[in-house]
Image 1 (cartoon, rainbow, N blue to C red):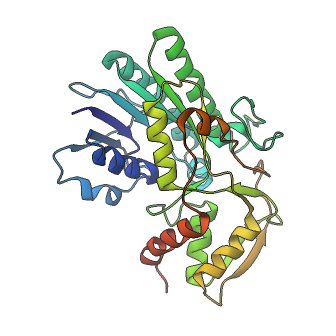
Image 2 (tube, helix red, strand yellow; image 1 turned 180 degrees about the horizontal axis):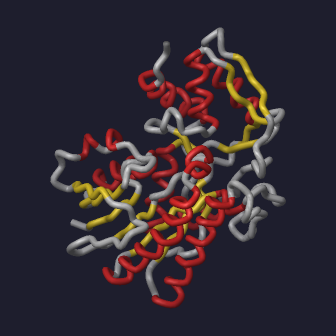
Length: 314
């Protein structure tokens, strides 16, 4: 049985990846310090012999006994509300955490996939964003702690690949949604669903003309799996190119939830908030034979079922 280490395993994406690798017949070692993860996301795996859990901060030395074939590094605060509250931890998990895990991959001769992000493109001047675009990032702005942590993560991953011959894969993840997102995550979709269910104003920043592209989690996990099993070591965008403005997205949520009290509330645009975000997925199509299958309408329905159970209404 092949063994895979998944860091950030109790998080939104990490927990879905743990499910997928169990289903594929792997022995999964889940690791998380629960800074932003929730043990509830992986509790259903605890009775399984092929799953084990380590409560550990990967910014400190990482030891895993026995053979290890794959490492997926998904540990990191990922929403602005988190990385603005925890800037040092965000930088450390992107820098020290990645360094520690690459050292482990080298020692174990394991293949390692690192979770990068569309945020490496910053507030892009090129649209849609292709992998050969170097980005427009403010390194000293409030979002710099996340953006630059991920840019460093990519750089050190390539260094280990080129200098130490470690087998590495780099995924650039665009906005993803689905069950197990934190209700208080602070990103657009959890905020909109929670506010609409409670009958509050949906917080739209600026005039809402900024765009995002939302990918359902099952599609993303499929892309991650295919990239890990491919022989491509350069960054690959995985996301859904179906672009929508934030204002239109908020209106879709209001219509889907159907709470007559829900309205739009406009607030000032945060500093360095990207105006556009849409992946060019040509590379993923050509190299991985991957493209998203779940429409936004279908994915939103599935996600609403989860939020209806999770959101507390007074």
